[in-house]
Amino acid sequence: MLFKSSILFGLLAVVAARRCKDITVPVSLTAENVVFTIDPLTTEIEVTDFFLKLSQQGRNYASEISNGTKEISGDYKLAATYCEPEYGPGKELQIMTHGVGFDRKYWDHFYNNYNYSYVARAVDEHGYSTLTWDRLGIGASSKGHPIEEIQVFLEIAALRELTTKAKAGKLPHVDAKFDKVVHLGHSFGSVMTYALSSMYPDLSDAIVLTGFSHIFNFIAGFMLGNNFRPVKKSPTLAPMYPEGYVAAASERSMHIDFFSEGDFDPGMLKMSYLLGQPAAPAELLTVGMPAMKRSEFEGPVLIITGERDLPFCGSDCYATKNVGEGLESILGASKEYFPKASSFNTTVVPGAGHGLNYGYSHTFTYENILDFLSER
Image 1 (tube, rainbow, N blue to C red):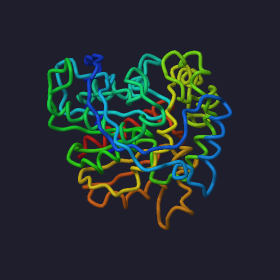
Image 2: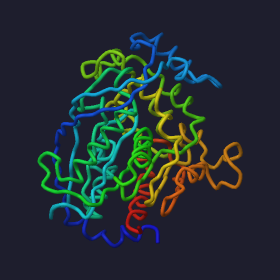
Image 3: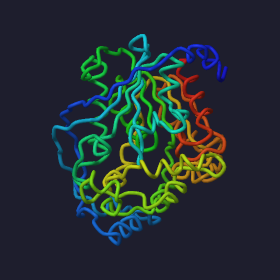
Image 4: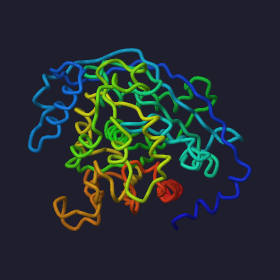
């Protein structure tokens, strides 16, 4: 029954305290990236023109500017945070991948005394170990060329390598290995998690895709709503990133793309912009490419998305008229992509926007995720 796991573990939260450590994970990666015939975007006009072309109805701009593929290889460093209960490694490891606009703090945000932290719930109340990480090219992880290098394919390779190391007990300064691993993603991170389950189905015991659906018709609204500008125009981000990355232009951009009216603390909106992270244009060119192949994953699946999610529901997850007959919500369109899943579950979070973890409704989201995982 919904929320029963929180009741079962509620008393533990009084005495439990997670132990966390920041780690740096060296990885050697190889991926087949797309060759795009454009240069890094350096001016506001170039950035705006790029997104106008990418969002044009009936136009496949990514295909227009692609010229085959090229193998990319290199050595990188992934910034991560490992947490476990105070008594030692948890029963399972949850590996969490953030989406565009954020870094690993999305899963363990300190705002309002960690009230919005999913990690706190998972570790302190439910006994999991967790591994959050900055996606390749973002945050404290290694940066790269924003067109040639930082694409979804190389980032999937990074997630695979991180998972393999965790399962084998080879994470630096972490004295544990994990036979059971659950993968969670948000938005772009959900695309990566989905692709991982499709390409390497034995690496996950369950997957949770948040802020996601297989309907990509509404991504244009997200891209234009973000009002991207060159990262070098951002005083806080400019010193941290090479030229060619793009970032949200204002707090209003974050409001449009991630928050739903009446479901957020204005202080959290402000914090999300102040601590927000940019994107590599090639991430946005490749975001949908690995998501259209049916997954071979045989474990349980949960897709949980806000009712007012802009990029994956067009701000109404129940508007299924142009998606499929007989669907309860847009999320149901993903069922055909998991023909072998042991269970397929969807949850629409009432009134929530795309940035689920940052809304007042985050408690509903977390309880649903943790109940799903406890009932496997």
